Amino acid sequence: MSQKFAGVKGMNDLLPPHIETWQFVEAQARQAFAAYGYSEIRTPIVEDTALFVRSVGEVTDIVTKEMYTFEDKGGRSITMRPENTAPAVRAYIEHGFAQVEPLTRWFYLGPMFRYERMKTGRYRQFYQIGCEAFGAADPAQDVEVISVGQQFLKRLGVTDVVLHLNSLGDHTTRPAYTAALTRYFEPFAAVMSEDAKITLAKNPMRLLDSKEEALQEPISRAPAILDFIDDASKAHFDEVRRLLDGLGLAHAIDRRLVRGLDYYTRTTFEFIYQPQGENALGTAGTVCGGGRYDRLVKELGGPDKPAVGFAMGLDRLVLLLEALGKREASRPMLFVVTMDGPVRDHAIKLVMALRNQGLAVDFDPRGGKVKRQVERASHVRARYLFVYGDAEHQGGQVRLKDMDLPEDHPKKEQQVALAELARWLTTPGTHP
Image (tube, rainbow, N blue to C red; front, side, top):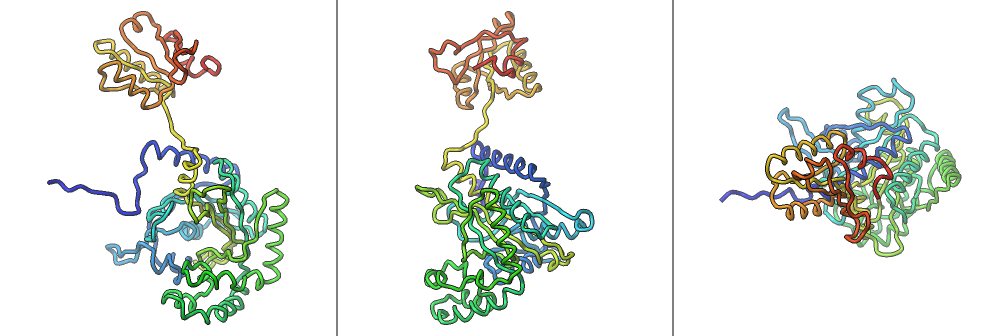
């Protein structure tokens, strides 16, 4: 018996018609980012493992538990990218963009990989849409990045989204805050897992992201980093809020928001889907997350350049859109039913000619009974249909049937000359 294969757990096939919603989201992303002056980049699927250890943080769950890491044939440690900011920074440094232009705006779309516990909209191969802006430390850049995220969601028709905002201060903030968190969490060490105890010792801020049940109540009462940020960071945060208010972008201060990666500084934000009724994303409603990472470029060996960006989970966006009834599906404009015999060659030639003029035209290459071909036209949701037989070929006229109209509609069928068919289908106002 031949072996049957299945996809790797957590890595899904994207197939029609489902993938057409993905294509819609990607197209809207490209339009939204282009309007803000962002150019697309594509980085490799694999990178040097040290890139992620150094940028994401060696005690984060991503690095300690979730990365797909292996040794290549040259003995190098390689990791399939778990996120795309670090690769973008690596590319920015490697190709000298800091010397070429003072402000660099990029966006990306592509797959990421993490071996994590799967749940609604979260997989081991998942897709992200994101952007990075290098070179501007001004709060206006933070607001621009937040605004492009908000406009993209608006293009998709995703409402009921709340912008959560916080500030993590700069590198001078961390020591005092880390010390305060350590003192606060030490009495709870007895109820922590071994992993949590390691996090407490190495980077207690990561405990604020912990999902351990025993820590949820202590986390809710933990000291907030906003109480520790320096004056410059506070002024930056206040200006971000002022500019957001000026644009009419409502936001909620979230004192517990620290994000899951170590490179963030100052502004950090999330867009959280919070509908009035049932949440299609379950308890985890975050659809976008990002913030500033002003020290990362320098820490990865580049010049001292500020940066800010965000990432959105494409899987979760598609899941949300389809739950909201916003499924996208393409359809042919026309289906041509062919008849057996020499006339079929003329029908196929017409189909190809119309396609070459940019029209979406379908036919059944198997031919066969008219009834079966009509059923095929209904299955692919063709807008129009006609039968191309000897009479149509000789007379130069076809009876065009509008598949969207009810049978008793006066314009259900119309006579159209073959010579005028392409013009009729493409001219606004010539058909319902």
